[in-house]
Length: 538
Image (cartoon, rainbow, N blue to C red; front, side, top):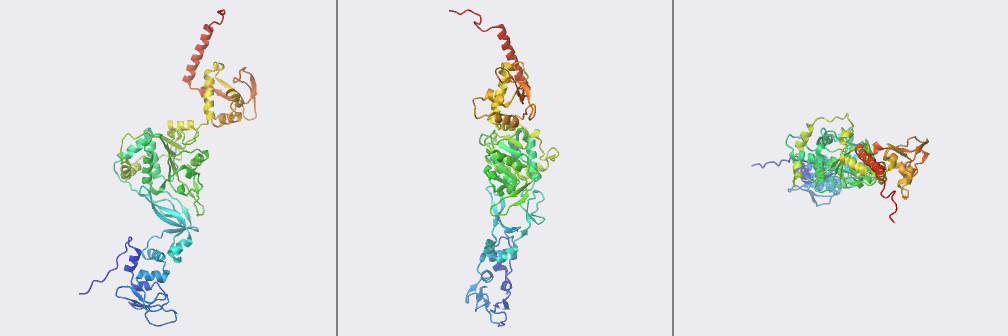
């Protein structure tokens, strides 16, 4: 009975390259890889030391165990009497014993596996598969030296390395393309698919984070998902208390957006090397406390920046579009950063502890991702005609933002606000006045005469930059005005600021104070001071 003929296995992507080569290649296939090796019959081959030599002596012969034996000296310089498997023979004869180079050629040429290197312009990179603490698979491109690739995989391996003109970043969660017009796309494929279903824990998390602004929260999530190329407000989650869900929310988004989201620290913004976040679409900065104003300015600039120059160690700088959207979390509710009064880029939410206890909430949120995406897809379209982010200043304005803006003011601003308000409410000279005028030097002499840290030029700067006030007459012009911040009400020449009661004090507070002052004045007229005209008692 004839034995069944051994069938070569079909390509298995998980098969070891060595086993694949030994099982699927015949000795004739192996020998064809060498131009100077000639087959005498199915089991005998020779490799002449000189191409003019025509002898038919078999240098190699296939034994019964399927391995090949070296019978004589040969042009491949393999030792006589040595036995080789197909892979061993291929490694020694073609790659001089470099098994990594042999495996690389087998994987690329025979198994059609993706080679883990690319060349962009003149720089080589290795695509290293990564997995974060949430189990999300990603690819990290690291600069790799050309000589190291040749050493590991052989000099011929470079011809198999795909080449691209430049990097690009084309964020698209629906229709992804790895290569765009000859450029390598640094955006990662979105790995989730939407599916109709219930989202009880996702909705609970959204309501917990966004509260009475839940509609804005869902709009922001829809923007993240469907419009990754658009600008977005800087979302800030603050809370002094623990167990409020800030980290849970960030972890949920990281699982949702995968390798296109990155978590960094505020010190990463200070570093000149920005590769860690330059290609990310969503950038989370946890436990944020930004003391340096220029970092805040950099953050605000990045939130609406169109391009970024990527600075990576050992790699030439390159420019790509920037689509980063920032999310900050902080335990400093009012002082995580200095924010100007007219700022329109921050969406600040103050979180409280969870009302429901669910120690598996992250797992539940992950399970609901397909249904959550389906829900986002069926929300009304975002109206980008109102602003480039789809959010108006009026919508983002809340008490949390007001508190941060207030705390961002300088100490002198707070002192001036208190002193001037108190002067307007309580000083007798302001009883019948709706306003008063004063120069910076008048304010210095009246309120800060003994404080050497505060100069009149500093006062002028705070009045202009923080109070948004300008002197009445304009630059280089003066006028006569009554200086109420003097004890003799002398008039003087200068270019004063005008302080109007109704602009500094709310109407109700002003009415209450006017009533109090009028009563006090009436009492003084009706009831003279005790013993004012009495004779001395002794």
